[in-house]
Every structure is written in C-alpha cells, then in structure tokens.
Length: 40
Length: 201
Image (cartoon, rainbow over all chains, first blue to last red; front, side):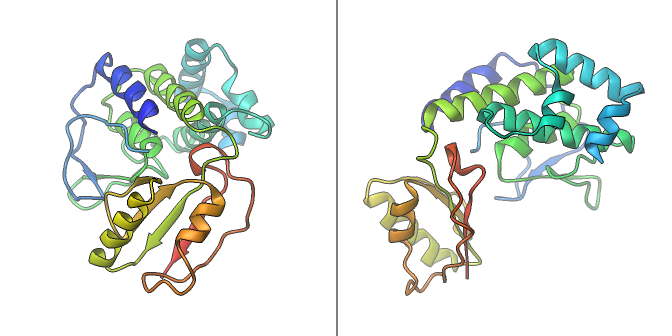
C-alpha cells in the first residue's frame, strides 16, 4: 500500500484544507488531527 | 434510501451530485443505481460515498453528521474512523474541503491508487479484535518478520494484507490471541475491500 499512500500524500499536499468546524478525533489513538492523512 | 434520495435529487443534493458528476466526468447516481459489480475499486468507493451523501443530504445533515465515517459525540466532536475512506469523507463532513468535487476526486484517486498497488484477487484483510495489546503487538511483529505487508497501529484492531492463504495460515485456530471466525471466503479484491476476513477473540 505504500505506493497508494505516496499518491495520497502527494494529492493532499495540493488540497486546500479549511479548519474543521468541530474537532476531529481519531478513534485509533484518540488524538485530534489538523489535516486528513492516508490511512488504509 | 440513499439511492431513492439520489433519484429525487433536489436542493443541496442536486448541487452535490452535479458538482461531483462534473468533476469526475461520470454519473454518480448511475453508478449507485447499477452497483459495483465488475467495476474498479475507485468506482466502489465512489458508489459508497454517493450512497452516504445522498442519504445524509436527504436528511439535511451531510455536514457534521455523516453516517459511517463519524458521528457527532459529546461536546461537538467528530470521531474519525480508522479508514481513509471514512477519514476523507469525515473531513468533508466537517467542512474542511470546500467543494464536494475535492472529496470526490480524493476518493477516486484513493481507489485508483489502491487498485494499482495490489492486484485484484491478491489482497486480503484480517483483524484481531479484542486482543490483548501486548499480545497483539507480538503477533504483528511475527507477521512482519515473515515478510508480509502489515498495517498495525492499534493492536486491538489490526489488519494485515497478504494472500488469503497466507493470512489463514499465519493466524491459526490454536493461536492464543484469537479464535478464527472466518467470513465467507469470497474473492478478496484489492486491499481487502469486498471480502474482509474478520478474526475476533
């Protein structure tokens, strides 16, 4: 999946990401993120 | 319900579908209606997203309460699921992507990239659910040592991708971590989508 992850990282680097309207917490590590990431 | 809503599409639903259709150059509702059979991973992901968007927009809640990807919990927090599909859609639901088209393009790219990374019929997925975290980490290390591709961030919900046979052989019934509860052995498509192998304690 690493090639897919690389493609997504590259694509996301060009995307304008606004601040989320509410905090987004990952249920995996219970931490809040500030950008979407690739997580197959 | 999503498909019925997509058929009626008015107001924000129409805006969403028109924008996505224009961005992708394909008819999302037709994809939802005809189903994913014989289609690519990217089409499957777009169909799933279309169903959820149509459903949520029909309820007037596509933003901030997207089904499947996350839900608004106490204190107005959105919970992200462990998968990128839910992840990307959830960022969309929280308003981080300004346009529906952005989310649609990302989802389609993700499907294409995953399809390209793993040939159809090769991928498989297994999960260690409810496993002890330490034992889960040891199991992941064992699997990684065998040279299998392995993704494991949370031992209690670990997925590994390899051939179906190798997955079944590596996690044996007598394993202390889990007992096997095999899902029907349907053909496994790229990245395990379509035929996940669930192993629960």
